[in-house]
Length: 115
Length: 114
Image (cartoon, rainbow over all chains, first blue to last red; front, side):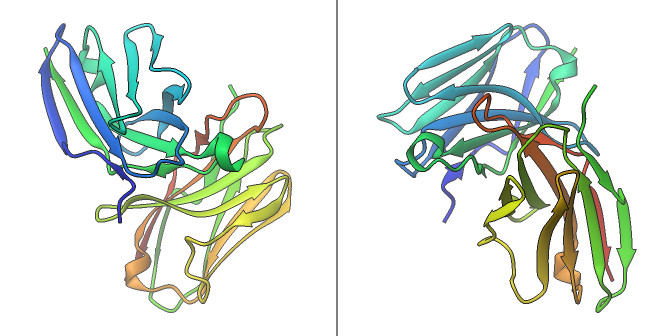
């Protein structure tokens, strides 16, 4: 029973265009969401987060949108660059509800940005 | 540049052997997590420590896996006996409650059990 789903295993985008990565969750206790980026042979690195009291958080080229009623979040990368090519993981936590900061991860979306 | 370190980076062993993976969390971090990444399951949480106390190990096969934090600078994950289905990449991550809730991951240990 996957509580965090990333339904697109891969996404290809041209340099300069927008990349949109999607994530759905089923557990209504989740109240804190994160995106991680992972390059081959490295550990995931934190990218951006959002708590359930917000519907948008922006950091440079990266923006995360949260739609609580739809239990959906998305990561927008604008403009996309070849260096953004990596696997992106969506993660969720019931941090404020349970006090636990453990994360439940989706299976990842591989983004390829071509020049 | 503070980082989580993990040793070994790669481990190949035969079925039935004991495997020990080590993790040094970032100095000052009070939470440590062990994750396993496989193609089928993605990233799964195995164990969670806060202030060196185990809080959640429900994701860990209890009969063969064990996780400990002998001190604040060392976390270990042991598999005894190892099985081919344990082949995966094992990540350690650390974080700090109360300030931010991001987890910082180490580079992982790639385990192959033949």
